[in-house]
Amino acid sequence: MNGFLWRRSTPLPNIIVVFAITIMIAFAVIGLLAPWIAPHPPNAQTLMMRLRPPGTEGYLLGTDQLGRDVLSRLIHGARISLAIGVIVMLLTAMLGVAIGLISGYFGGVVDAVIMRIVDIWLAFPFLVLAIALVAVLGQGVDKLVIALVLSGWPGFARPVRGEVLQLREREYTLSARALGVSPFGVMFKHLLPNIMPTILVLSAIDLGYNILALASLSFLGLGMGAETATWGGMLASGRNYVATAWWLAALPGIAIFLVVMSSNLIGDWIRDRYDPRSPFRVAKNQAIAEARARAAASAKPAL
Amino acid sequence: MSRQQPYGGGARAGALLEVQNLTKSFRVGSETFARSEAVKAVDDVSFRIEPGSTMGLVGESGSGKSTVARMITRLIRPDSGDVLVDGRSILGRGIVSKSFARQVQIVFQDPTSSLNPRWKVGNLIGEGILVHRLCPRPEVRKRVVALAERCGLAADSLDRYPHEFSGGQRQRIAIARALAVEPSVLVLDEPVSALDVSVQAQILVLLQELQRSFGLTYLLIAHDLAVVERFCDHIAVMRHGKIVEAGDPGEIHRNPQHPYTRSLVEAHPVPDPHLRKRAPG
Image 1 (cartoon, rainbow over the protein chains, first blue to last red):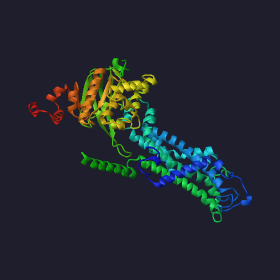
Image 2: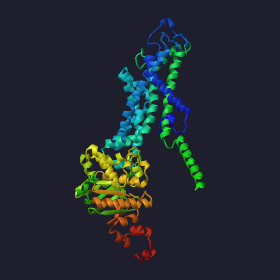
Image 3: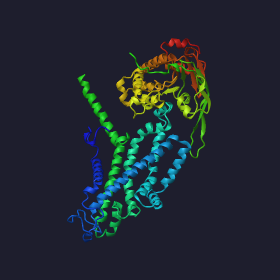
Image 4: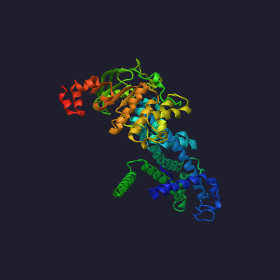
């Protein structure tokens, strides 16, 4: 990466990516500042002002069936969604990468056992597994995080293992082993930096999945208590009023859509930046080669 | 001028390397539902290299010479046989195995892939020193600088990444990295075949210099006789996992016994073609 986005020598690859990054940053800032920028407390009920449409005086995005401000609840929902999404992403990445590294590096029986477990894990749909785990563990933020991490780690473990299988035969790995570096030294100091691009892409996409899963679980009533303002919970309670108060379901839906889409777009963008075979990189390399050829051609007559 | 001694292993250097009856077979074509087949990569290979001398191991690709190199550097465990440095087996496991890493080091063919692209050169060279705690942390840098200088690298190259260097410079980095742990035996797995001809000579000269000053024992692996003949005190020719001929380089060149060796000698261009005609066989 050479410098920041706006200081790159080449023009930005894509306006959509800028859009996605802007949205993510905006939601992150909103989430961080939630208690200060939300116009009302998220659970303050004004029963006189129930089901008011967006644009009502003092309630920019309207109110819900209990007279709570939708905007304030969305802002607080962003805080919870993003915080849990990021925490789950970090924990899932750590667990999955560690398991993938060990599986790929040691190979043999260790690898066979871990990969069969991964196969079994992946045979269950992600959400079904998360629901089952929440049902077993019970409610609460900590249990939700555990459930999502436990159902998400194979998503990291398997691609990481695949990369490690390739990299462990590289001569720099052999050279480190010949130097007497311990297996964990080789894994974390030599292999990990080289699979970082993959991990970044997986993480960005995983963040989107986590937020979506969190919303789905809240929608099903398996997330946090009903009083906590979550996007999934808002969607669930707004569903009953879709015909009369569309904003209750539509607004949290839009928020979920924007965040998940942005995180996927950012993931794709990171992959394009790192993967030498991606069309974007191929085009860029071609452009560089052509520029060089032109420079060489124009330099020749002068000689 | 009191310079940091880049190589403190002088007393240990120049060990006798003995390889006894090394055998290794690999399983090929192992699929879930297919029977795997054992292929003998190395079949009962034995040789010894006198302290401070160089032995050349020549053979076509697939002859098992790299497998021998990897077994000597403990990257692959042999099925049977032993590797002795100064009479002591180096094929131990666990903690013991780490100390053996200081005795035998390896330089690979392609320095593009033998240097981790995400590490700075200084850290690559210093890794062995840190792993084996050869000196206190604050002094590592000094040692790395001295070693880099000894291998013909500028001190300012230590803060750059391997891809910023030419092939020859990278091979110098790889050599410095291997020498950092003060080995007594250095295995050179085709150290110059990925390099330009002009650079090849420079690296070979560097290796000869290093051998002279530190008394290193070399095992030089190559696929043709050109490099080996001038550089080695001894030659062994490998084919299909076996040593088919061994001896003095001049002797082998003048009078190759095995048909495979003869084809190798003939493949190697001779400055004066009349010389070849006069050679027997």
